[in-house]
Amino acid sequence: MERTPLLAGNWKMFTTVAEATELARAIAAKPLPAGRQAMLAPSAPALHAVGNILRDTGIILASQNICWEEKGAFTGELSPLMLEEAGATMAIIGHSERRQIFAESNSLINKRLLGALKFGITPILCIGETLTERESNDTKSILEKQLRQGLAGAKIKTGNQLTIAYEPVWAIGTGQTASAAQAQDVHAFCRLLLADIFDKAIAQQIRILYGGSVNPANIDELMAQTDVDGALVGGAALKAESFLRIIHFETL
Ligand code: PEP
Image (cartoon, rainbow, N blue to C red):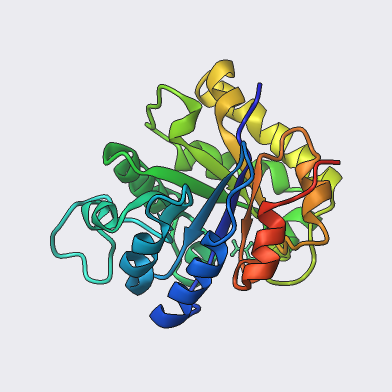
């Protein structure tokens, strides 16, 4: 089963609108390699400006979060309709920073995910274990809980409607990447779970990205793993040169 590789940049709460615009222009200046997709998730204030630059480039615009309601008294939240208006077609949901710093639970994340699906925005559901959980051999049970609870009630017809990002918390922003073998092991496990949650055919279509200190030096080996279908990149997506090298990873 061929899954189109997706190289996704999460700019977190970095870049002014002017910097975001400049960065998006530099990334969009180089044509995408055939058979690959790229995505940028700027901060909310920069969505419209970056969306204008990405239009007709083939690069996907994403938000870093999403609310389940289109409007209302939800101070600080991001309406799916407003995201659509800016041109966003994907949304990062359940990033470990949302889970850890803003105490987002699996059930809140599930509401966001169902909301995104309802409005036709493709969720990138982030899951990942902490170092303590890995060291106490709880990685797989934690990931299973995050996947089953995060996806509860989700109805999809094809795997293109959903993306998963496996991001071990101990690898995010630390410079410590999971080895390619560790990533492959977890991704294969997640695909089995997805087959149980949906069905085998859909599980084969769903892209599972790896995230956690991905950089130009480790992307080629990560992308050589059978079940690694792309990367969600933080720090290395903030420089055009390094993110472009990631998009243009070499096939080993
Ligand atoms: C992320 O923000 O999802 C991430 C993986 O960050 P970094 O690449 O900096 O570890």
